[in-house]
Each structure stands twice: as structure tokens, then as C-alpha cells.
Image (tube, rainbow, N blue to C red; front, side, top):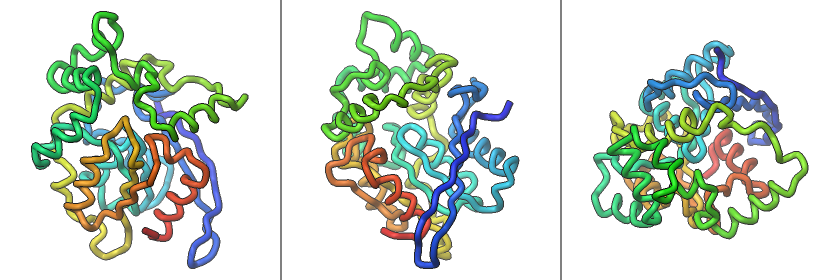
Length: 269
């Protein structure tokens, strides 16, 4: 079964005039009507994207944007199909990437609440307990899965309030197949054993025919900014954008989506 996809178009102005952009949003395995994949790995995410691009005839090069936990798929694309990519955005992190200094990992990990630290440990050391841990009532579950507002910045709260106040905001949940095959499995893969980490990666666009962009809000309470700052320092070929006052949902702030897409297409820092 093909994954759930949604197509849209938009106009973007650049130095060479107006460009028509075809946007394809696809729901990864386990989300929406996309088939679950119990064997999902970091590598399989890139293979899924490449296969979908070929089936849809997107050509030899395409742009990839990964947001939040979807960013793991973008790092995977950088590793396994860099020859197919034109540009990237990837904010996701895992606390067991082997090439990161212990002080950087610890600083990022300690920015999480105690209960979320335990959720992360369970996902890494005992992934078979993830579903139980996040559905039982003896211990606190993931703040994100429990919709705890404590992990939202002031900007995040403003954005979510605006979205939920809209009459058209109610739609079919993307976790209709259950949280285990979607959110829980993503958590397991993200905090599992990766075959690489970003510091292993070389510049896939040494000929300056593409760009790697990394965006992060400096008030993000869900994904600590520490590790992405370090990635940007160690990999100078990544164009790093730190959004002042931005929370985890900063891409939904007024004007941000257009700014991100324009930067990707015309190579603006």
C-alpha cells in the first residue's frame, strides 16, 4: 500500500524570477493510512523516501524537509541517498550519537525533565517497554505524548492556541492506527542504535549545487538546542538558522514557512 500523501503547490520568488513549487507531504509508516513497518530503521526511512520519489516521478533530485521527530528521516537521507538530494532541514537529535562529547550530550539530556529522561532511557535500553511505560499510570509518561503544556514555550502556546481556535483545525488524527505503530515506534528508532551520527557525514554538496539547512528555535523545550548548535559548529557546510524566541513549533509562526522554503530554494542564509 502506498503511504498517505498530500500534494500542494506554491509560488516562491527568487533571483531568477517566480518559481512554482510542488509540495508533497507524506505520512511515514504507521501514520494516517500508511502501512505500519515493524522493521522500521533509520536506513529504511531514506529508502522509503527514494522509492516514493521514483514512483511519483519526481526526478533525479528533490528537496527534503524533516520536522521534529521526522528529522531522523532527513539525517538518514543525508547518509544513504545524498546524491538524490537538493537541500535539507533536520532538527531531530538522539542522546546516544557516539561522536558527541559527553558534556554536550549530558547538557542536552539534563535539559529534559526527569520523567522525560526516563522515557528516553526506556526507549534506548528497553524498547519493548515503551508502549507499557507510556500507557500505564504508575510512572509519568512522555510529556509530549501526554500533551503536557510544561514543554511548550510561550510562542508554542500562542501558536497552539491560535490553531485550536480555528474551526477547521479538527481533522482525522494521524495516529489513527494507534500510538505504538506511530509515535512509540518513532521514539524507539530515534533513541535506538544508529549506524552513524551527523558528525560522520561529509558535505554532499561540495560543488555548491545544493545546501544543507538546520533550523532551531532558541526556546525549544522539546528538542534541546545544545546538540544542533554543536552540529553546526562542527560541520561548517551546514547553514544554521537559530530563531530568536522560537519554540518547537516555530515553523508554524507567521511568515516562517515561507522564509524556510525560500532559503532552501534560493540558498539564503
